[in-house]
Amino acid sequence: MAISAPTPSVHRVAVAGASGRMGHMLIEAIRAADDCRLAGALDLPSSPAIGNDASAFLGHASGVPVTADVREGLSDVDVLIDFTRPEGTLAHLAACRELGVGAVIGTTGFSDAQKAQIAEVARDVPIVMAPNMSVGVNVMLRLLETAAQALASGYDIEVIEAHHRHKVDAPSGTALKMGEVIAEAVGRDLRQCAVYAREGITGERDPSTIGFSTIRGGDIVGDHTVLFAGTGERIEITHRSSSRATYAQGSLRAVRFLAGRSSGLFDMFDVLGLRP
Image (cartoon, rainbow, N blue to C red; front, side, top):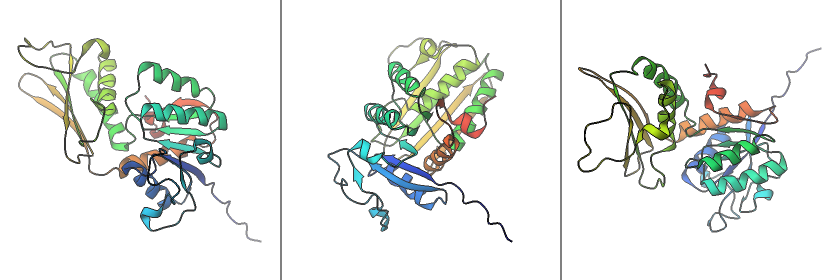
């Protein structure tokens, strides 16, 4: 008698900001994944998509309406993916905590106090939070850690990032994460050594600082370069995103990582097995 293989579990996923650019990319990625199903779609009450099928932009009926009612949108969900704004994400997380729903957070711009709130929620539900869900960016973070340790002396460190004209926070959360990784690797506190602006007579560069430069324009998805400038040579480590699809695929890897976990705060190093 033949024994059939067990049916793989399907992850029921909700998307916050469902009618935005990233929301559309996430919904498309979920539809294409064999092991994920769209089970909820959230957006602001003012969104014209409210009440419409969340997959209508694909010419496909998912049966999931876009709603501004967070509890309704999370009523049959395992994990919420949220790439919205800090205040919105925190409101969504409060509902996740009540309903026992995990979360994958790609939102950036959180204050230290808000990050502490997220850590508190993670005592009750599992959360993956990362400023960038791209697999390539997280591999780059690992490379930066190694490079910074080797180039801690005699090299000036600059982080240059570029994003589209609609991005509201600067520097990007990814650029700040790169700075944090580098600062920790060389034994510095980024809060004390970061330089975010230069204008006028600035004097010579302090070699202990980490500089940040921000570019905003057009439809740039996301470019990040870290420059290690020494005497007689420069090392540049660069990642360029040409599509938000990479963030969506990384988010689904995070969804799968959370399966079976009841609590805890994780990042993409945990998801990708990059933790030293």
